[in-house]
Amino acid sequence: MSSTKKLIEIDDKALAILEKEAKKQKRSLKNYLEFTLENIALRFSEPSEEYKAMMDDMLDRIDKGEIDFIPVEEVRKKYDI
Image (cartoon, rainbow, N blue to C red; front, side, top):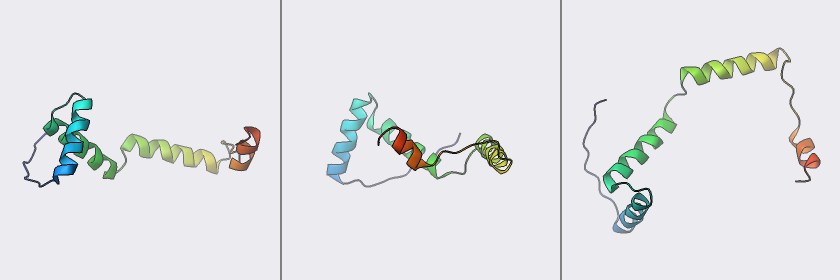
């Protein structure tokens, strides 16, 4: 996988917070920032083909009446929530 270097500016207070979190996770600040940014980027990416196939299957099963749903009100009543 290729990578690109970028120069960024971070507020000193924010940087101190990030450094503490990196230490908690036993990571260097650089590694922590890279790891965190990559995870955030993945959240913005398109769902995987496996996930799409699973959701298509679930939607088909719903259309065929193969899946029963319980209204949230019934669940709350059952568990006194």
